[in-house]
Structure formats: C-alpha cells, structure tokens
Length: 106
Image 1 (cartoon, helix red, strand yellow):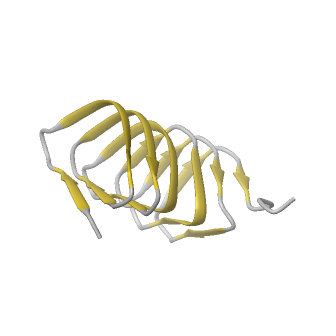
Image 2 (cartoon, rainbow, N blue to C red; image 1 turned 180 degrees about the vertical axis):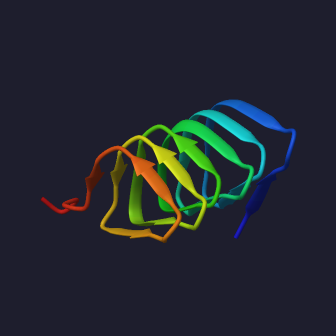
C-alpha cells in the first residue's frame, strides 16, 4: 500500500486523489479523494472536501467528510463541518461543530 507524508511546513493546494494513505502534518487545501485512509496528525490542517475510506483526526479539519468506513476523532482533534460515515468515534477532548449523518445506507 502506498503511503504519502505531508510534512510540517508543506502545503498542498488543489485536488489530491489516490489509492494509498495520506498522513498530514502540514496543510492540505482543496479536495481529497482517497480509496484508503486520511490521517490528520497533531499540527496537521485539512481545509478540504474529503472522500476516503477512513479518516482519523488528531489535528484540525474544516470542510465536509464523506467516509465509506469510519471517522475517528482523537483527543484534541477539531472539526468544523459535516461528517457522513457509517461509523463515527469521538474521543473525550475532541470537538466538532457540524452535522453528523450515519444513515448512509438509506
């Protein structure tokens, strides 16, 4: 499986798509479309419309998330926007401002 690392101080602005995972410690803006996982680490920022199999948030996300499997918000993770996923885990200390839709099969 391919793994892409967006390090601190690095910014991607545009459309990102692929089959592998992306681990974000920098900034990603625009649109993200992945067949696998998006992992936003502490200090990482994603300002994008996101479609992925799974999304894990330890950093900051502003935008919409559509996950085919799950979204997991870790302690300290922050989300502004709507989440659509069949499974959502929100840890103590994570914050979200937006709507959650788990009725993805309807």
